Length: 120
Length: 107
Image (tube, rainbow over all chains, first blue to last red; front, side, top):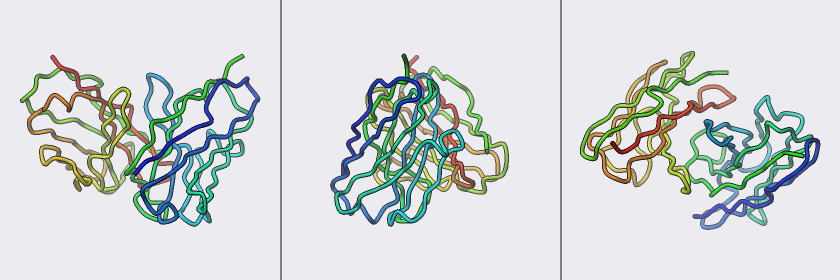
């Protein structure tokens, strides 16, 4: 079982990035998937979650309207489109597998994370 | 939003000692409380979910208890690989939230 994030990097305030998470070793569409972030030196924060079918999503208030979570079950890939980025979005972003096909809220597999830095 | 407060922030202990970590919720989360372990440079992993259920592959020295707003994670006898950051997380209400973490360091 493996989750590999990509797409992080340095972006200016107001800019956009799209994170990807390639999944392998399990039946991707059988699990809800999530993005969780961690500001260096701070605690973890749920960003967004999507059900196995993609029909149900949730967002943290801090990103709602700016971020969009999506998934391509045929290619076993999870995405996070991040727009209107702000300095306080700077964090390591983790992709994670939820416990069941519906949004459950227990993350049983995590990726290594990708760093997003929002700065001029 | 449910706030989870963990205490203490840091603990210095020796291998072989036992430890109990605390997590207090700002409102009732029933038993929808999980614990994660996170080491620098490594992937976080879930230890306990639904307050007291050990995740697959987690050693029996890890146990969880509590209900409502007060929860604990107990490690019966610390192994060298247990020195890490431990975070609690609730799934009772969206947004799901984490505590700020307790760091276990070697004395």
